[in-house]
Length: 315
Image (cartoon, rainbow, N blue to C red; front, top):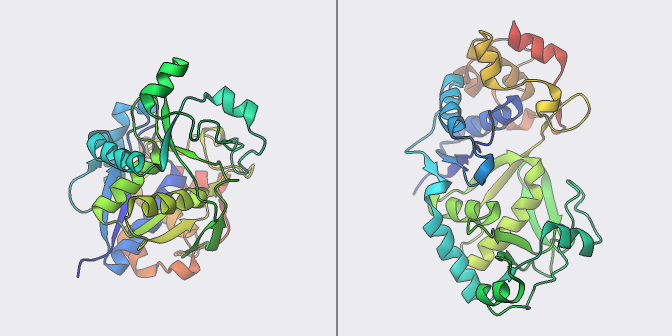
């Protein structure tokens, strides 16, 4: 019987920071404790936002921190054919449709914003309107994206960390984009195709993606990929203002602290403290944390990055 499979999936749109690293560390610890295989996937589909130098930097800094993976690195930018096949299957089944709506069109037509990020819910303007992508472009002069219709019933699942979840996708964004007008796969479709092909059945990530799990479950059903996936959505690392850790909170990049001369043990120790594996901030290693980490002791509330955390990493 094959072992379970998980994945580390950084996006090279910027450098890894402490919040990313905490999620990756928990994922890695769970995998190594439980005998999961670890796939490393570079999610480099985000066009102009992808920074070529960030790919090598990501691989380098993960290795510096002591996190390892199994097998070759997978690059989404090299997998267009697999995504195109999935789109063709959805179109043939009548579950995907071309959409020529601009962001401004959606803003004008929508009434209910998505709670987490104020993204308006798509009202289905183009659903059933055009027979094909060619017909949509001929009628409007716009290159279409492709959307998939969402189910009438809420999508429910049990999360190993966040507990039972239930999302009505009609109210959480509505029909969503699976292929962009640039003929590039969108996030939701790409990760579903990649996870299924790699046999990923243990998905560990931040709880800002809980509603994405509902979309991905829906896509898996439409594509006949099965639902044998266990979800682990972790509370985020926040800044002092209660918002997700980002540039506005100062420089928390792993490379920033490395360039200041901090050894990986200091960063690993802070992350271990945030994960409930250490009783205080102190230098540590992934091997020590493997002995001490217990998912049951992982804080169920968000972690707040403080000046004391920054000072510890700099020391």
